[in-house]
Length: 180
Image (cartoon, rainbow, N blue to C red; front, side):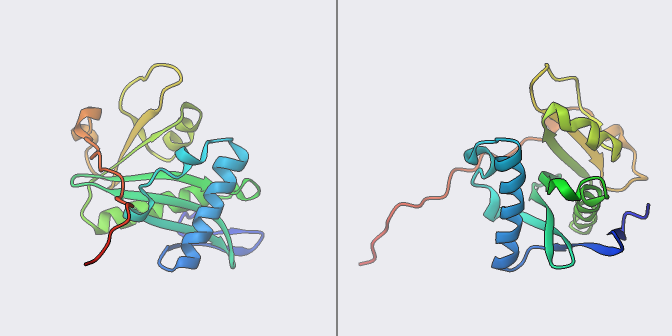
């Protein structure tokens, strides 16, 4: 299957950068349906306050949103996360298409490495897409995975999770302010 051009029942499956409020709402609706509705993930975990500092991708079948992916950017790597595909559209390459679009964006921005953390039951899916576990985590904990942005690159530089120091940004200050 050519990952750059997928289709479902003859209708093309496309991905695009989220740039309009309507796109953002569609991406969030897909994530809410998959994470909160299907997987019973609490809202506070599905939407963690990092969304407005991230890049989002939206997968659509025609005009219907069917998948989404969030990408956070760090100095030395890109972090695709929150991959969500509506149940009835799974198994058609939607997730792969979103991850490949993220890889293309990361390459264009000069990132050499993709890093993510997923639940143990999702790790095998990422491994089928060419991702590699950093180490063997204890049962039940998140699995750290990496992938070189350039498929021809040497993965030897990707050895330890400590190389992926995530910034701990404070929450947005939403306190009321007055102007004198």
